[in-house]
Image 1 (cartoon, rainbow, N blue to C red):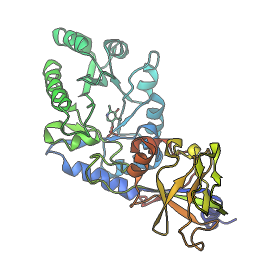
Image 2: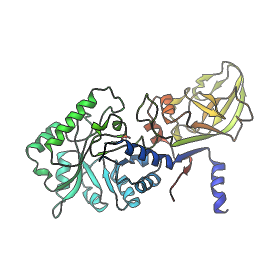
Image 3: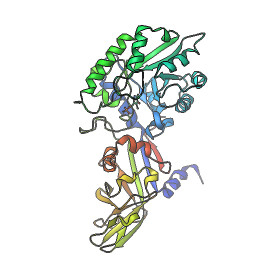
Image 4: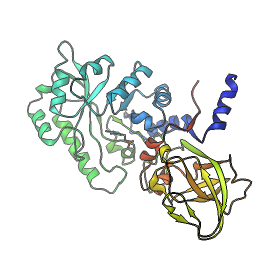
Length: 374
Ligand SMILES: *Cc1c(COP(=O)(O)O)cnc(C)c1O
């Protein structure tokens, strides 16, 4: 087998194809960076394998585009990213687990310190030189970060921070995709108060959606993730981001069924009239969530067809009664995600958000990266 026919053979056997447009991800980073107030910069959050789309492909692309600061969630993600990017700043949002300081230091990762114990643990390593770190303050989300008590203690006595090189103070918004939610303004005010109480350091409050709340939320840098990967950061309004993901599923079988025939597990769908059903090789093991059973739709040559019956592990069924049999035939690919039915639409059908759709995408897709650099 020659190198050139390998991709087409992989495509021929694929039950489903996941296309990832790297040029769109880069365009999205530039688009967000271009919206910021003067002097603010755009980091990139590439946790969970770049929201399921491949950190090894996404992170070097964004670094080449000019991104200088990356966030991951875990130490292992940070170590993997350090191998890809020897010289950029990498911060680990979940912070410093006991006993992991040596590995943080070896991989030159910045722990995002979330409480006084983590500060003390990181500082105990800083015997000879100041160790860089970031500080997360909780401004109203009650998830991660220094709470009001710890913050007040540090304001009174900042000596626990003495051995640290504070690369940033950050906080996270609970509802940035809801511009009218009063908590946004309260968190903004709480963040300003926290900054005034702490030693001077670059500040960051906004994730992707927070950028669209206005320049007051931009501070020194912003931390978008999902928006880079094409998820709408402004739900309910048109998506300002470029489409990144396309998914196509293979039709395995097409059958004619009588009125009254039940379809799939649990006999949960019953045909109300005679029709035709196409079985597609994508299921919940591929991240096509079971909660999308009986809901949502697929596209065949531009025509929408409904999902019927339950999504099973490896398969779903579509009602293709009204579709030209030359198009709805075994071997053909149907469009599960495209520009007319995007990640957010698929998420709405499954009762979830685009983030979960992307990070749930399984390992079985034939992955095609388009628009890669050099
Ligand atoms: C995940 C995360 C982000 C990125 O959020 P998006 O909504 O994907 O833009 C930013 N900051 C923190 C602390 C996070 O946990």
